[in-house]
Length: 149
Image 1 (cartoon, rainbow, N blue to C red):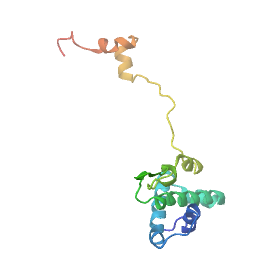
Image 2 (tube, rainbow, N blue to C red):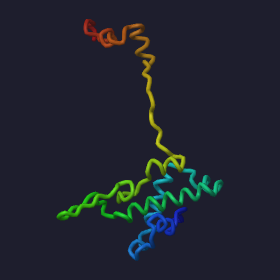
Image 3 (cartoon, one colour):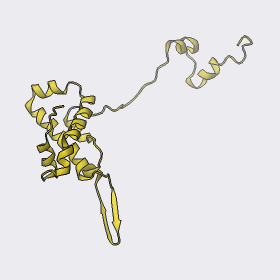
Image 4 (tube, rainbow, N blue to C red):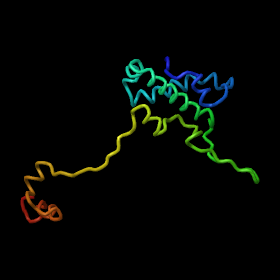
């Protein structure tokens, strides 16, 4: 699978050349990164073809996604030995192939959030309960006194 991101994009994000081992796996990781993007942006190829700048953003995002895995392939968050301690920032080296919220936003695929939800009765409830006070709707709807129930 040809990806918009290239091994050079990963090297740019890492600020170094790929190791021999990383070079063996870089294309497979770029393929995975692109599949994650395609799952959220199915018309990715059309967007890239129509806008060269957008293509550069996509390749940069793919490179950074893979670089996060290469910086910390085991996903270690903290390591202590005697007086020495190191903690890795998950945003920089999570070891997980994922796009950050900022990257998704730059691709135009930020997750939608629900700001508010208003409830409404369905037609059955509106017909059955009519103008009943909301706190009494259950009582009006309960057929406890109806022997045919």
